[in-house]
Length: 120
Image (cartoon, rainbow, N blue to C red; front, top):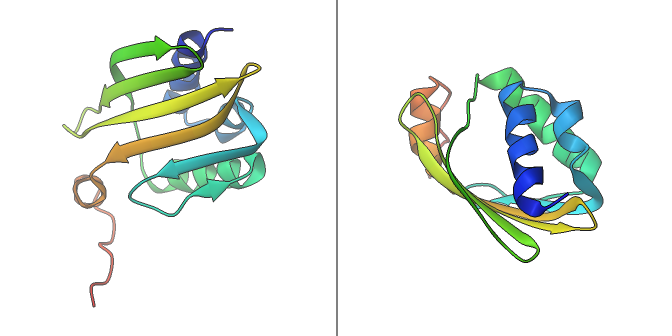
């Protein structure tokens, strides 16, 4: 499967809110680093992260663009609440080994009515 096709299928699983299905796209030692948060290491930890996030908020990924270059796919997205972001996926042997996402965490928390982080 090409990186672009894998990311398209990843989006489908994401939009279903299915942590089990989405975890199947990751290598056992994968790293998911949403830059607004600390990196999450390992397929099991990534699955647990998605399970927590899907339980906390209804998230929808509307694809604006998916580009691919070699082992990388780049996803530009928006959601129905007006949030926008992008993600970079390194795919090796049909599995995501590294994912990095860029989005505004404060806007996300406010849009979903979630608690804002404490500030020092």
